[in-house]
Structures are given as structure tokens and as C-alpha cells.
Amino acid sequence: MMTDTPSAKHILVTGGCGFIGANLVPMLESSGYAVRVLDNLSKGSTDYLEGSTADIRIGDIRDRAAVAAALEGIDAVIHLAAYGSVVESVADPEDNFDVNARGTFVMLDETRKAGISQFIFASTGGALIGNAEPPVDETSLPRPISPYGSSKLCGEAYCSSFAAAYGMSITALRFANVIGLWSWHKKGAVTTFAKAILEDRPIIIYGDGSATRDFLMADDLCDGIRRGLTANLPGFNVFHLASGREVSVAELARIMCETAGKPDHLIERKDKRAGEVERNFASFESARTSLGFSPAYRLEEALAETWRWMANEGAADPSGKA
Ligand SMILES: NC(=O)c1ccc[n+]([C@@H]2O[C@H](COP(=O)([O-])OP(=O)(O)OC[C@H]3O[C@@H](n4cnc5c(N)ncnc54)[C@H](O)[C@@H]3O)[C@@H](O)[C@H]2O)c1
Image 1 (cartoon, rainbow, N blue to C red):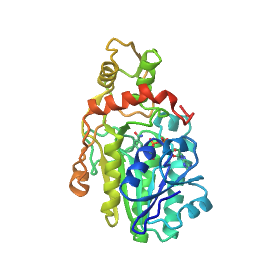
Image 2: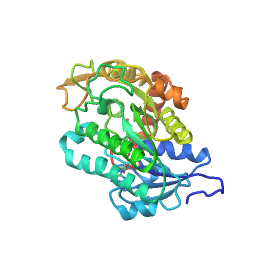
Image 3: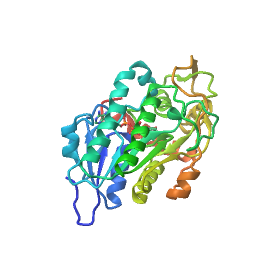
């Protein structure tokens, strides 16, 4: 059940049963928001929200009737639901387009029809920008190199036009590579490296290990999302939510092995995969200026906390989607 104090602002979080939702929903609730979730459970689990008072609706973002029902009584939408894997998007671009591009269009269109003006869109930094010289920022020219990146750029394009054409307040937040609790079902480097260490298999690095990423702790990301919600900026705005620190995949593997107390864990290399960008990290200066966003976690702390959760609770992941 959604808690309903008279002053509570009612938020719909799509994809709220996934990794970021599992971190965001409790944070919103503890800030006094009443939360409803719309999720089709293709990747997430209602068990991730155990202990939350969110009103959980099982449904698909492409189903207009389900979306319209979920929007009743809502003041603002945080749209997280998507297929988030670059590699899976290369294997099946149409499915990725349908969920991410069409799904975002349906969410925006139903939100407009419901007379709700505030919408926050979970976008992406690296995959959307492509191989531009980092650090990238809001002025960098997007040139996605994966269908996933294209789907998010398409989503941002509709966010821009819906803000202009229908007077909505829409903020696209471009997330860095997010790490943290409830990420056992994810396919990113930190989760796959942690599983390899725990299962005593070699860590696989695709390419020569020089590719770089920008890792952001989920708590910091969710604080940025909450700031975007509170700011409720008029028109269309875009912000990178990132740590600003460039880390190579080889360095990440080394830090993780050390964090796990296995500095000599075996690392193997395989061919680079299509769709994955070379260097990526982003400046969060604009989010700092406009939203007061400033990540609190250092990478080593974020990895240590994520590792502890993976080692102690991750394998008991309730989603069954790992
Ligand atoms: N995790 C990251 O590092 C990262 C980085 C950049 C952007 N993002 C974006 O953040 C958002 C959340 O990512 P996440 O890491 O929590 O992913 P996730 O896969 O853990 O969560 C996504 C949730 O959306 C749900 N979902 C998928 N398709 C749906 C549909 N058609 N209808 C309803 N629900 C659906 C899934 O069941 C899942 O619970 C996504 O939009 C993703 O692209 C994530």
C-alpha cells in the first residue's frame, strides 16, 4: 500500500522493482513521498521492495490501459523501466527499441493525457554519447554506437519535444555506470567480476583492459534523482549524474580482487564486444550547479560496500533473474 499523508507528493516509479528502483523507492519514502511502482517483473522482483510501503502494480509500460491506471492520483513520474544492457541490445535491437523507445513514448503520452507535468527520464551517459573525447558533458554531441544508446537518445528527443509542445517539466538524467546493493541480476562489469571471484572462475575482460568507465554509487545516484524531483525545473533539462572519475576496466578488476582479499585472482582477456564504448567519464558540474548534486562515495568505498553485499547477500538474490 502507498502511504498517504495529506502533504505527500505522489510519485510513480516505472521499473521500480529493478536495481535502481530498489535503492530509490525506500529513499523517496523516507523523504516523505508516497510511491507507486509500475513494473512487469521482466528483470526485477517485488522482493527487492520488501519493507517498502509502495503500491506495486504489475504491468507493462507499453500497455496504455495499465499506464493510465497507474497514473491516477500521481503528481510526478520517474521513468526507470527499460532494457539496460548494451550487449543484449546489439543481440536484439528490436526488443530494445520497443521497450525503451516506444515504452518511453507511451509513458510520456499517457503522462501528458493525465495532465501530469513533471517527468524524470532515466537516460545514460556513455552509451548515448558514444566515443566522444571524455570528459563528456551536456554540450557533447551524442553519437551512440549501440542500439541501447540510440533508444535513450530517442527517449530524450521525445522528452524535449513533449516539454516544448505540451509545457511539461521534463528532466533527463544521464546516469554513469551505477553500482551498489540489489545489483546481483545486472550484467555490468562490477557484478560479473564479483560473481567470478565468488564462484572461483577467472574474471573475463573484453578487449585489452584499457577501456574506461565512470562508476557511481546507487545512493549517490538516487540522491541526484531526488534532487531533480525537488528542483522541478521548467522545460526540458539534461544533466549527467556521474562521479567524474575515469577508471580503466583493468584497474577496476585489480581493485575488486584486492577488495575481495584475492589480489592474485585469475584474469583472462577476450575480444572486445560490439557496442561498448572505449573511454567514458562525465563531468557533473552542471548537476552540481543546478541541483546541488555532489557524490559522497569514493570509488573504493562504493566497491567495498557493493562487494560486501554481493558476498553476503547477493547469491540469495530473490529475483531469480541472474
Ligand atoms: N544500472 C546502470 O548502471 C544504469 C546506467 C545508465 C542508465 N540506467 C538506466 O536506469 C534505469 C534503471 O536501470 P536498472 O539498472 O535499475 O535496471 P533493472 O533492469 O534492474 O531495472 C529495470 C526494471 O524495469 C522493469 N521493466 C523492464 N521492461 C519493462 C516494461 N516493458 N514494463 C514495465 N517494467 C519493465 C524490469 O522488470 C526491472 O525491474 C534504466 O532505464 C536504465 O537504462 C542504468
